[in-house]
Amino acid sequence: AETWNNVPLAPPDSIFKLTAAYKADPYPHKINLGVGAYRDDDSKPWVLPVVKKASQIILNDATLDHEYLPITGLSEFVTGAARLILGENSPAISEGRVVSVQTISGTGANHLGALFLSRYYHFNGDKAIYLSDPTWANHFAIFNNVGIKPLLYPYYDPKTIGLDFTGFIATLQSAPERSVFLLHACAHNPTGVDPTEEQWKTIADVVVAKQHYAFFDTAYQGFASGDLERDATAVRYFVSRGVPLLVCQSFAKNAGLYGERVGALHIVTPTKETADRVRSQLSVLQRSEISNPPSYGARIVALILNNPELFEEWKADIRTMAGRIIQMRKELYRLLTEELKTPGNWEHIVNQIGMFSFTGISEVQSKALTEGAHVYLTTNGRISMAGLNSKNIRYFAEALDGVVR
Ligand code: PLP
Image (tube, rainbow, N blue to C red; front, side, top):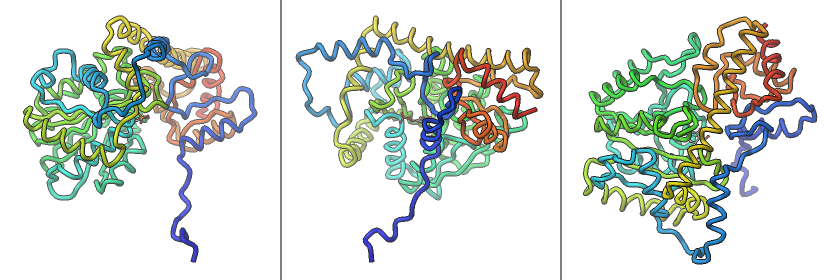
């Protein structure tokens, strides 16, 4: 028998498959709304000017070598990253209660966090985590890989194209005490629907009452509102309420460093003594998985986070990206409601936040957009707003109008 007879053929990743189909399409007005990466007004990837500047500083630094980083990563990077999400004046940081480890971008942070929980969290019954319905598809695989069973909590309500707040709260209340809930810190993927500040407070009340664990995933800080501080509000609020939590942080989108794999896992613990024990075991896990994280992207982000001038430039670059996306939301809304008078309510286009928008169109309509109009999107009706620009938005609005009419 052949050695790998038992290996079944897996289907290709749906997002990457979509990109391949888009690339193969010769139609000149084709649009790719599948990919979760920022594009400028010419549909091109954008290297942030501040990143170019930081790379130049690194290239010119004759003292830098290619030695291994410490197991837990570049310390200027992880401490800066912790301040960025938890706040400049975070008591958790000043009290030494935060464990920060550099990871292989947000995916690696999710994996390391999941692995740590699977080893050390006192699960109440089965090893399980509650994920929002829907969520980033990779969450299922990441938790399954470490033997944590993904369960779902209601999140998106197709009737309102908004948050199913009642269902969400009901599941927080009915779940066994000390359950683990994965929460998207801002700019929920794939829906673009976030709880309001008031709703976050109510969510925290129940999380505190039931002693749940909050597994925060933040891949879009700055991308939602254009303001790094504002997009960290939910995480900081939960820390201030004393909720036991961890944060998976990615610099792929907000620094445009996708392929450099820059991220961090932060675990907020009750005491410095706990933090020391947790850090020691995270080091052991990290050693066996990747030994040491990669240095190039971390050096870039460390420069940006620790140099006030570069940090200001980064904030401006983030406003450029978030601002263009918000502009596209407004323009799409205007085209649909004012010019084309497309049937239906399109408020959600401007109310949703971040890179993605759930249009509310059906699977059949999504497929019709791809097959009939060469607009590539996932069949759940999610569009990446970054794929729209001043040149293609009218074509897209007309195509969308065509399939819903
Ligand atoms: N978490 C969410 C919700 C995401 O949408 C993404 C990227 O699409 C990630 C994590 C991690 O991405 P990366 O590993 O590129 O940082």
